[in-house]
Image 1 (tube, rainbow, N blue to C red):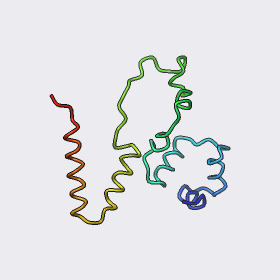
Image 2 (cartoon, rainbow, N blue to C red):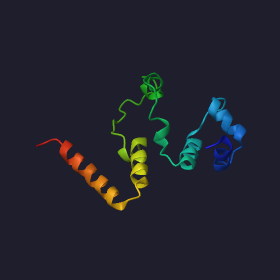
Image 3 (cartoon, rainbow, N blue to C red):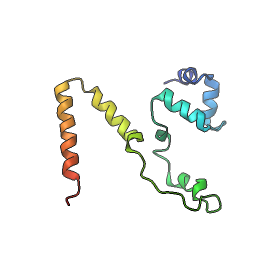
Image 4 (cartoon, helix red, strand yellow):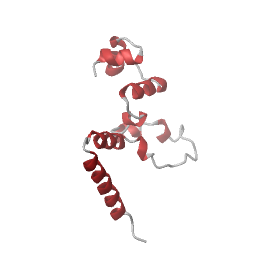
Length: 117
């Protein structure tokens, strides 16, 4: 997607998009949300490949700024980029029989990897 098309989708000029891309302007939460809608990805897409060094600088990791009892949680698998890519690839399979077999294969693999009780 070109900067011009992205700008149109966001209601911005391509020069403004360039400033975001170069890091001249910071991207706020609402603009990040708008970007995720225009690009048709979950907001978490922008953080999936964050380096350990960058995530280590997060305010939540700074003792003075972190909340004392921040709850830990498992990220929603439905919001991951991998899930989105998998679903898109699945629906690119045009033959309904092949798609159904692929679905059954995935279910069978998931069943075989579940821990035995």
